[in-house]
Every structure is written in structure tokens, then in C-alpha cells.
Image 1 (cartoon, rainbow, N blue to C red):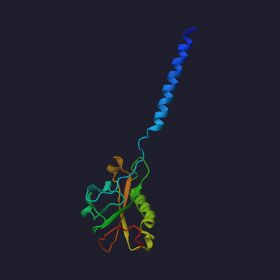
Image 2: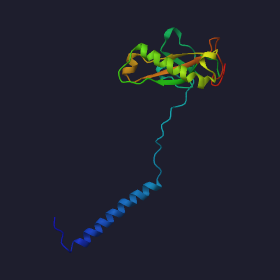
Image 3: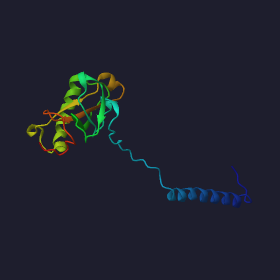
Image 4: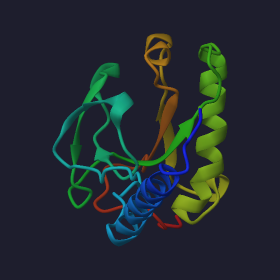
Length: 165
């Protein structure tokens, strides 16, 4: 492309204007705060009916009857059987099989028990169990096991965090 000498100053002016316009956008973006991008887990909501695969850390509940897959969460300030104390993400794309899922949940929950309860699992009078994803859950994208702590002696009121018993 051939630019004549008469058009060179016009091209330079247009280029300068474009440069200022673009740098102005940059300055404006510095003045306008960026949208919040922090992702956080929603707080547990007491009194919601949920599938056991959707339990959240901090949820309190009563033991589901007969292996039910739906439970109602309770305020931890009310008498309850269990409290979700950890969530274990089990790695892998393909379903590893029931035994591998249970082993991962057992290991993961045991390793997180001490930090939550404030005492080693072996020395504690408290116990835990877990809800694990089934193969259909896994295929649908749920690879997490929920670790649930409770007192074998009966229902408790309040959290068991730091109970050290």
C-alpha cells in the first residue's frame, strides 16, 4: 500500500487518536473495580431436605432411616445424630469401584477426624461414617464422600468440633 506524503499526517493523527482511545479504556478499567471472582461454598442451611450426596460440611442431621438417600438438615443447636465434618474428593475419571471408593472415604475421613474432633480417632469415644457416591452419582460428576461424625451414646446438641472426647 502506498501512502502519499499529504495523507501521512492524517494517518499519524488517526493512529495517535486510536492509541489515546485505547489507553483511555485501560485507565477507566483501573477506576472501575473488577467483578468479584472468589468462589465460596454456601453456608449450611438448616431445615432443608436434601440428597445425601448434597450434604455440606457443617450440616447436622439425624441418621437416615433404612438407608434413605434423602435427609433433612437440622440446626446444630437442636438434638441431632450426626454432623458433616469433612468432604473427601476421590480422584479419577472412571468409577474406581465400590471397594476403592469406600477405602478412599475411610482413609480420608480418618485423616481429617483428629483436626475436627480435637482428639485422635483411636482415643475418641466419638465415631464416624460416610456417604459415598454410587457409580451413577460418579457418572453424573459427584466424586465426593461426606464424612459424618456422631456420638454412639446418642444424639448431641451443638457441634462436635473440638469436642476432644
